[in-house]
Image (cartoon, rainbow, N blue to C red; front, side):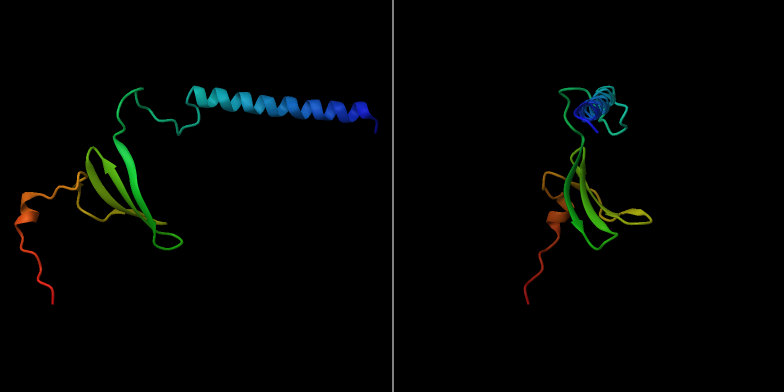
Length: 106
């Protein structure tokens, strides 16, 4: 094969890669990817991932914060379970929790 064949191949490859990149940009710009967040610019995020702990190959504990409340969720292969009761995310304990006596060390 001669040089012109290789040059045509390289140009065709660059053209196809440019088309794929342009299509990906358009899809991301218009939200066709499905994972684009639907929030207004400048607004505060309501949902965040605080911490994640892998337990084994199929399960993981995830601490989520939603509207200043934290939820502990066990994510597994077959189902997801909310493990912990919602707590205030600010770290402040409720009045009921502060009234309980502390355990004495043994």
